[in-house]
Image (cartoon, rainbow, N blue to C red; front, top):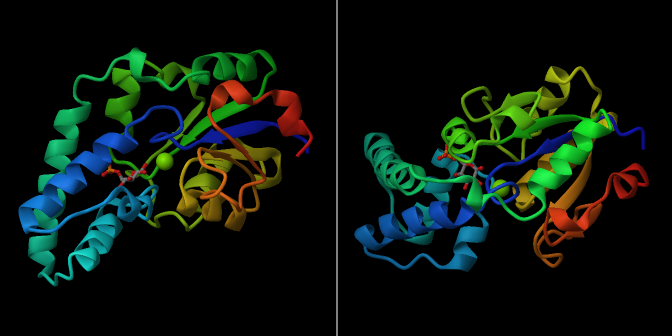
Length: 215
Ligand code: BG6
Ligand code: MG
């Protein structure tokens, strides 16, 4: 492919915030009186805050009013924000900085494509904002992954076409979003869970620009 840009999901790709999301959802479920396993949590990855809450409530077999939903989502977010409030660059996942530096050297543009409304806080905490030409987060988009909006907007803001971009994703919903947007996709994590990606790597130490050009 004619590789011109890379779009990175944030949570679970650049930084391991997926564990903090899980902790906060698990805490909410516990307050509501049910268990929320890591397996259940897989379906929440990459999904927006409200859509995640809907899935969680379904797991608990609960029906609540819209007002209550907002209150529960706010409670979860309060805990989550507390967990991410003192993040440092040490929490950046291995290989990310080196790979971003290599992309810069080769003149390949970089974007964040995240569903999170907290992406800015995280990028500041880990001091990585300057590595991205474009940041598209949950505050800019209307439709959550698996809708491709976040990645399509990322490509547009980099002035590139989808076919010139590769997406990096740790979530099934994100991989579906990349495919729907007409982009190649690198899964980061478990190959069994991320079957629909073009290639799957354990982390960013295991990818090269040449490998992406061959996709
Ligand atoms: C995604 C995470 O990046 O952002 C999801 O993978 C999360 O787990 C979503 O629900 C929304 O995040 P936030 O920070 O706006 O609640
Ligand atoms: Mg993710």
